Length: 93
Image (tube, rainbow, N blue to C red; front, side):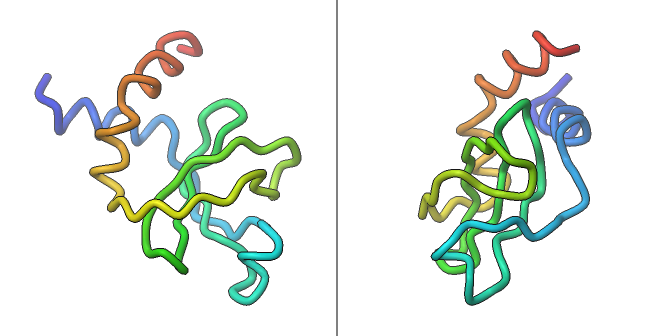
């Protein structure tokens, strides 16, 4: 399996229908940030202020815990996150 198909398989296991989650006060103006994937108690979200993807823990579904301002495109983000992603997916398979 090449890297592309490995990412696609991983992505298909964690992706969710994009939904706006709350993260006050940063996300207030835009109605929240788009969460696109869930891994255990972490969410992957798109920060439209910084125009990049980030991850954060959440304690309450629908509420992102921490604000981050990386500017990764989704593929770069998944590549940088791939080690943890593979470990978590293998443990929860």
